[in-house]
Image (tube, one colour):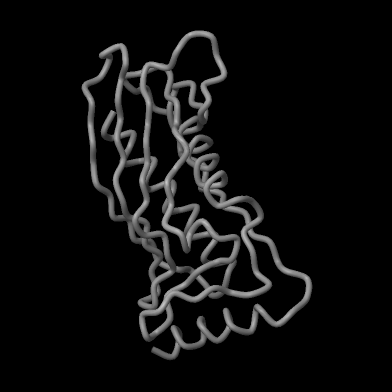
Length: 183
């Protein structure tokens, strides 16, 4: 309980400056690239809940309300950052060519990935939660269409916005692992 209150008070104090701190979302590097059933994947723009689309970093307070840290911002548009981070992780974790929409190559991708996030939040219980649904489709029929729900929880290692940014990256890597397993 004291740790959570300290985390939340640290988040509140982080907003007391005039020069906002900016935080990147960076998934950890995968151990090695694995071969998957498709050679190319187009990642559609991710859908995020309204509080996660905001530039401010959100967290859940003890009373269950969602608050934002003032003067602490994401370094990039959250939707773009999430999609780019997922593309980067899938590119490094698989042998497939992976790109965000619009597909930049002349030959069409073998698979399309759509991610819809329902929750993306530093929870008051000390975990970061990333949940929602992803769908894989293949215009060529290389893989059958697949839809899966996900609910990824990673611990907030540390306190404040840096811990939230780090946990966000680890959660995106966890989502990448679930997507790879579905291929």
